[in-house]
Image (tube, rainbow, N blue to C red; front, top):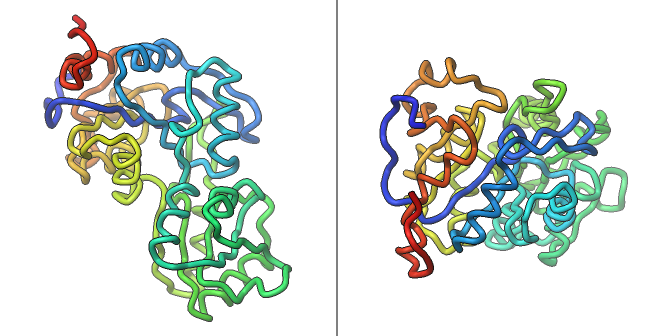
Length: 292
């Protein structure tokens, strides 16, 4: 199971799962899902053992509750609060920063978590679109030059740039697919030279947000994912246990060649092997017996 790699960082009390390439494969338009082997079984077992877990996706197209409902429809036992998107983390960050009005470069669903948090959102072409405290870049397949210009003008006016994902590719049924927010952000930053606040993986901000949501210390989390520079890097930087799958962007033979910060503590031969990493977590919480 561990693939000859280093042991984990300590007792695992909660699990953070990537979605695309780890639990399922979507198509490029994000409207069809293929659940990967073991995904339903593992989440069901964790629920039965009362082990806290969350699904942390870099996908921002759908509000968390809508995305959770889509996953339940294909059999994944996920509650609304267990589905966390970069928009959820962006809303938390902007509230802490006192940002009350945001230009969203993304589909309608991208800004829903912000609106739910009481933050006003505007889109390109709307009145006062550049008179904002923040710009949030997410899933935006229809992005054009007018959007890029609006974002730049807002940033030149003092707005903070927040980004859902800075990952160039993600795994789908059709193979690697371009991350739109990566490309959009590259254009905006080339023009503005603005620093960015990343609210998705591999930011430590995202990992800490999930830890607070689960009520588990970061060092007691296991992060399960398919990308060495996304989930594994995030876990390593934060001191969590990094567990790799081979169903997404990275194959088994590629994992061992990774640099230390991109190398997992364990490679899962199959997704259900994650259960042995959390064996004993339920005893620590006083709600079960150790599994073999």
